[in-house]
Length: 124
Image (cartoon, rainbow, N blue to C red; front, side, top):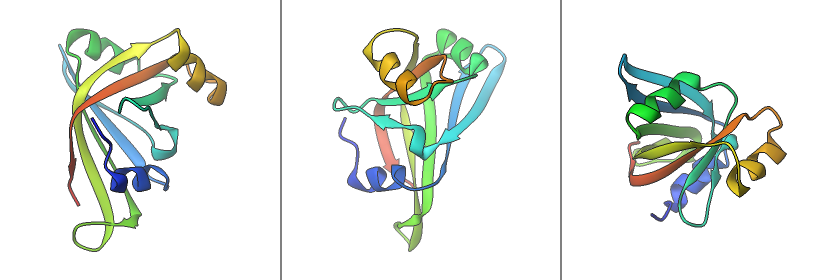
């Protein structure tokens, strides 16, 4: 899936990212930063994971994920600020080139969260 240009602009700015998963015990959310996300040529989003143990357990149960991200520094649909909702599937990677790339930049990463978007919607 192609990443919208506006979302690329958002990822270059300061902002928080919320990642929601659903496990046997119900929904769970974690946060990361826009600047941590790497967009791959195939459209996958790679995110370094330091903790995220419950997120990992939830994804083993149900690999669907919802992600929101935004920035007040990028013009949106109604003026200043924009955001996106990403629906997709995700998995944790602990070896190989995708993991090694992020581990080189984020020494604290124990894994890489790889998200394959199925839909991306601008919400603001």
